Length: 219
Image 1: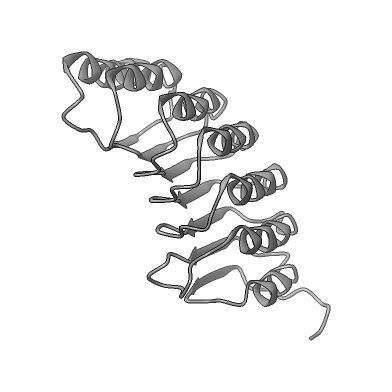
Image 2: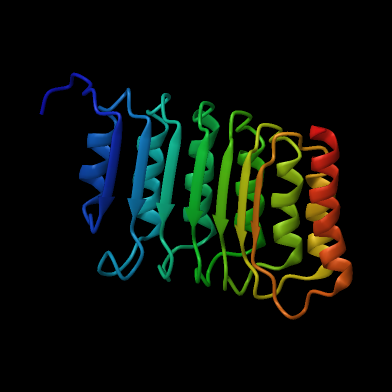
């Protein structure tokens, strides 16, 4: 294979199992702007692993032009905090990223530690406009873990769209923490949350505060 970089700007891949080959190929795509990967267990036999995420992370670090990154690895039971941290570390090199979509739903081995590492990396993505995070049914992640994400959001002042999927154990306290993080976001246009029957009027009031604050800032 030639060592010269190719001119592809967008790649979408499903059911790809040779992560070493994929990683080596991606390193040649210096001008790549959109990378869409679906490695959920029902798409990829055996599912993604920490080792696979390490290969992917090393490739991502070589894609400085990337503006949109989607990674769906839901139902991959072998992913741990180590794998999530590998991906988080790559974001430190992706300072031009504008759209990020991560789906780690049903990853039972991910805990607050991994979410904390992700939160630290998200703080660096100052150009981010759209953020979709799905850690629904990650049983070892609780309110403390998601508060790491809420804290990181305070640094993302360019956000226009936010979609957070971890509704199973959401509480009023979580929504209040999120409301505080987003209170002065003038650019936010879309907020998508998944609520449950544990949310009371206090939680919904926190959501209303987000909406009202941002509307008043735009008028």
